[in-house]
Length: 68
Image 1 (spheres, rainbow, N blue to C red):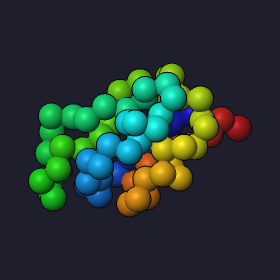
Image 2: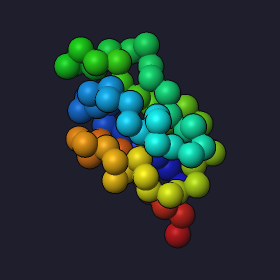
Image 3: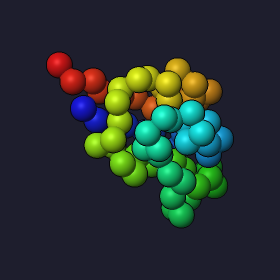
Image 4: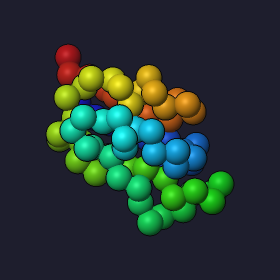
């Protein structure tokens, strides 16, 4: 399982941070080309693959590759 975030498209809305039941995401101190501190999957091993982050992201920058 892997959590992918397109850091260049992330606008740091933080919806994924607030909606994730396992607190997988954090804001980084790094800035993307648009000038936003993007989100990263700080604890991907805690992800339960619920998909709430994927469906709630307004810019569709999160993708969860689920276990087979």
